[in-house]
Image (cartoon, rainbow over all chains, first blue to last red; front, side, top):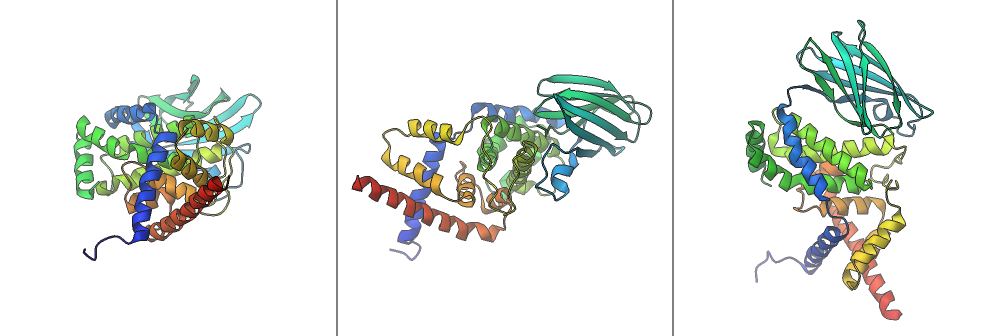
Amino acid sequence: MTGDMPREEETGDMDLDAALRDLIGRVDPMPPRAGEYAIAAFGFRDAGEDFADLEWDSLIDDGVLTRGPDDGRMLVFGPAGPGGVRVHLGMTRVAGGFEVDGLVEPTGHTEAVLLHDGGTVLRPIDGDGRFDADLPSVRSIRLRLRGAVSPPIVTAWVAVG
Amino acid sequence: MDPLETASLVHRAARGDPAAWETLVGAYATLVWAVARAHRLGTADAEDVCQTTWEKFARSLGTLSDPGRAGAWLSTTARRESLRVLVARNRTPPAGDMAWIGAAREDESPEEIVVAADERLHRDELATRLWEGLNRLGDGCQRLLRVMMAEPAPSYAEAAAALDVSIGYRGPTRRRCLEKLRRLVSGNAEQAHDR
């Protein structure tokens, strides 16, 4: 026998590993839908829109993890596209949903589409880059900005409620 | 997966090769799922995390600074998305770096999860003992073992990214958690024989 043989304790770990892996595979398998999402996500690679990832989230990036979402929440997306567009989004929970105030910098986009898990809300963006909207109680949102200045900009999905 | 192979697949996928993308998904989809579940997200929230993580990955294919570490990138992104979902759902994480797993799932109560698992494990004594032992482990060990049990098994770097710990932390902690689990399983077996 060689000195590379695993010790008894290690052999036991390997057995336990295999048993655990088998157990998890039986009680908590990845649903097929999650795999389907992953395959379909390839289509976003060249979707013809600039992506604005979440850059700052007051719920997390304030370093105040004990604060709940019932307080006002600020989100900043971007920079996106050659113009470095940023979207500032304030969300306040109210009875029945959320009040949303947005600011797009630099200006130029004219329409904000707020997509959520229950549908979409279209709102105009004024000359100062501002828009607002009322949303029902939703779990997640994302924004799509349209205008003549650049390709559409789409933000990441964010869980809100 | 070997970093060079991963990097090659990322480059091919960035150039539009769907087969390369599917290979990457095959290699890492269960890891992303495991990270979400390790944070005790329910099915719907865990699927949201998977969807968001893979979309971000697809959009980042051409700009990854280290394509060979795509698995760690996915782990990190899934962890951050899971944390964000937990906070947004008003499930405040405790302060400890490994201790904030106490959130309830939104679509299944812990009792329902246990009952469903018990039914799936019916007549399998070893699996039942393992399941009972796993549920009695501390949160940190549960989270670590859930990530480590992704199939295929994650690398040290991928697991460390999923858990937000140093690579050196994982090995000793894994051994300690497995030893705890072994003791719990043995204890369960002795209790079963005493009945």
